[in-house]
Length: 336
Ligand SMILES: Cc1cc2nc3c(=O)[nH]c(=O)nc-3n(C[C@H](O)[C@H](O)[C@H](O)COP(=O)(O)OP(=O)(O)OC[C@H]3O[C@@H](n4cnc5c(N)ncnc54)[C@H](O)[C@@H]3O)c2cc1C
Image 1 (cartoon, rainbow, N blue to C red):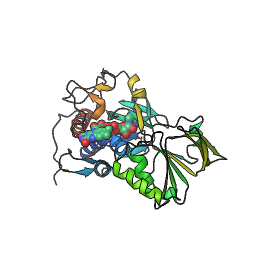
Image 2: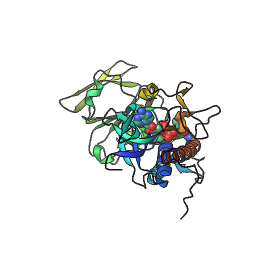
Image 3: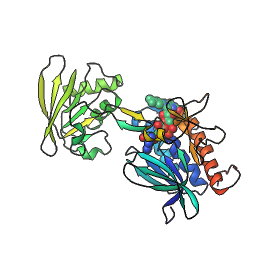
Image 4: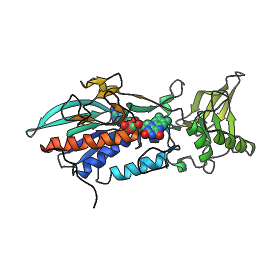
């Protein structure tokens, strides 16, 4: 990054398309800043299906989704991109600085961040974890309420209540067995889990050994504590009986929802309701210097797949860099 904080390319969203755009921009010697609303890299792949296998990415007959995005991150960040996690973009303005026209972006956490071009790789929009319908739930964030498990050690000897019925809830009920205190309470509002049958069966076996306590059909009704979570009230919605369960860590794994948010207010032409219209030849939007790639980018016949997003990222990055430098777009091989 230059001393004045201006980079060549701002990339909005660190999913596979954003990480590919970072690689191709860096490969063309462009400086890059990535802004991502989640606290982690990898987009949908890491947030929604990290434990599943992906079979259709060129060169990988079968690869674990998390491993794929870890490799994308290694490749994309090798040129030293500046990464801002946990920041959702808000405003976009065009400013003049030292005779140069720049794009200025602000986020809910900071900015303005200046760049010469922008590539929007925002997928379906900023991801937010789905929250429990308990009044005042936000107040417990950072005080025992978790939406992700990043480091198992954080939960060492903690009394954990995990809420959810999908793969993540089951995976972490099993994955924290060697870390958290036993039993780990697994709370789901239905009797049937959506997770892999083998994981559900393993949890049931662990219940017999005291490692897990499966609570269904149950919902968390209240959170208690003084400064940090100490217990939760859980209602069995079948019998309407309630129980207070001691708890240091309430881990809610209820999936994510997404919204284009402020990006939709920037004057970008949309393709349908959720995509930004691009010219597929260049991946540029109707706003000069603003490109888009991946799931967020739309044109007739668009297919939303990782491979397509990566290809669009290559087109967007090469065109953005050529435009900044006033050059013709030409491929540059990476072979060394
Ligand atoms: C269950 C499931 C299975 C799938 N399986 C396959 C498969 O087998 N093969 C395949 O090719 N595809 C698959 N897909 C689709 C694939 O995951 C997407 O095509 C791919 O993730 C798109 O990548 P992306 O980088 O464009 O967007 P995303 O992965 O959605 O990443 C976008 C990122 O931008 C961030 N962002 C958005 N808005 C903002 C903002 N305002 N400020 C800051 N950050 C923002 C988001 O938080 C997110 O991290 C699957 C999808 C799902 C849901």
